[in-house]
Length: 128
Ligand SMILES: [Fe+2]
Image (cartoon, rainbow, N blue to C red):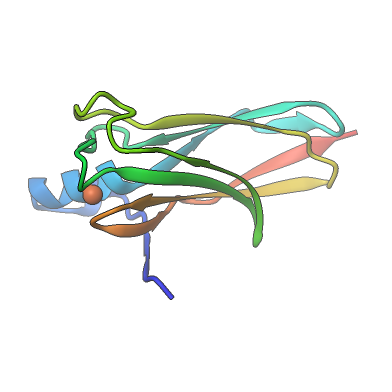
């Protein structure tokens, strides 16, 4: 089992290099607070808010996945160089159709050098 690194608020972290390390490896969920049952709902997952991650052949973000609780909804895989071999925010927009009363969204990402990272959960209410 890989270790799962969970996001911690970087405002609570002293060292600049550690802020950079945590932020660039953390997936952040961007979506509306509520969705409509049975209708397409877009959820964007973006790596890092302030700091960008490398896209080198031996060190890159290999995948980003979206979960509803423990259930995998979707996953996107990247190959090295997809982001031009430059530092960038890997970003994926997932389009899902919710049918339950609420979504408990969690994103995970995988860095080829620094392992699995998990976002802060985001709750979305689903209206009929
Ligand atoms: Fe990394």
